[in-house]
Image (cartoon, rainbow, N blue to C red):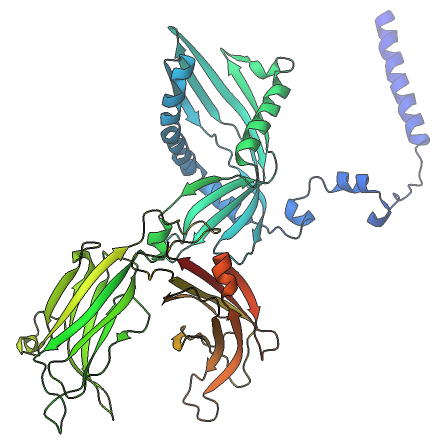
Length: 531
């Protein structure tokens, strides 16, 4: 009877309780109070937006979902590649360090980054006037790696396993200098903008060492201090990709050429019995205008004895191109012959004399080259840069002038980077023209562009520092059609005093163009003085 009574009483109690719950349930439900965000304090707002992506909270950062998808799809292959690279890099470092602690060996038994890839919460790109690209990604990685390191010492063997790794970091990655050869940058510089957050589990003989009181906090502070001392901005880790001098084809030397004379040239004047020869010199793969000798009128065996200096960028591939022309007062000048000298045949600092047969062209199969056209005599010396010249990858220093630079003189290097907000009334096809000491140099034309980018370099060999000289740079638009009314338009100009370049060695600035509403031009100047 007692068991039946307890069951019946329980059922009756549940029914009565449910009835009272339903009976006393309020039928009027009030809407929740809605408060505008402006009415909340800063702490409440921080709690609300804590989990939002960083690109939502900070407009300077862009979404990079496509990069995260790319990393996720490639992660199985990136895992193997990164682990292989880590083993290769760490092997010599470990071999160098373990003798200090009397350890026999340290090896990776297992090295895997797991199946969970890192994600980028956003990315910021910084713009500068230098030849560099700066990006700041926000990296978060809560991975499941399996890293087992085995160490042997005094005949004993111990293993350490790293698990449950979490890394939150905000690195700054700088690609510089930018070069015109793939992958288009010479080095990678990696810095940390703030101390990273690193959390991991550490197992020794199966036990989690990080659970020991005080050890977790000690390890966290130790990692932050060590990483911060090495890589916290402005310190950085440099990863060289290629030689910047080779990639940018920076000047590596000077070729001194003396045009001595020509022998037994052929008559080219239609109504005369002689010719008016002159010589043009140019290095292959070079955009600069050719060097020209004086014209020797009515002479088939002229003597010039003129010296020229040409800047060499790649002696392995470049050649000296020699062409002899017959000057004509009216009409096109007639080519009398040509030849070339490969620079890789030259020994630095060793003078060499050449007596070359003039050819119609450089095709060895052309029967026209068998006809005698005369000869030309040259004296050539190739002088390289000094060994202590400073590398081009350093933005704060400038290379020394090459051997062969006149004593007290130097090399003035002018780089026309770009122009902005230039616009003509009738057309905008801008190019830049340099005027310096009677010489004129021009960049390429850029069609229909208000913000042209040239990135062209010009060099001037000077006998003395240009302390009292002025460089004039003009931005001009040329009509792309055969326009007779407006063939050219001046979009603005700037005059630069070179005294500051001599004292500072390097200047890279944007100059406002005179006679232009908003136009600007970025020009980099370097003065490489002779030692």
